[in-house]
Length: 117
Image 1 (tube, rainbow, N blue to C red):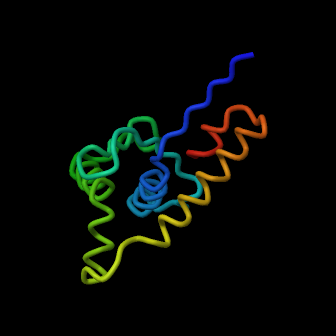
Image 2: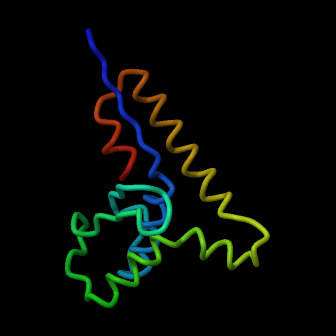
């Protein structure tokens, strides 16, 4: 029996995307589902907002949201005057990621959908 498991590390960007989108549309971030692909810095972060319930964001809001998602880490560093980074967000993302890896290893199916959303 061949088992294939693939995990990527976009959890922090998924958390930020859900939070930032919820602020724009006025919803609970726990109910927002934003898939993120690509890398983990700047423009390599690609939030798939077209797959959310909010496909019709005005271009100006959409562009500002994508920029904020892509450079959210910089926002935190600036808020801390360069004295730190988003360690609490990273801890939450790490815990969520580790829990999903363990769930997958325990045989749970479709961890991806439960994990990223």
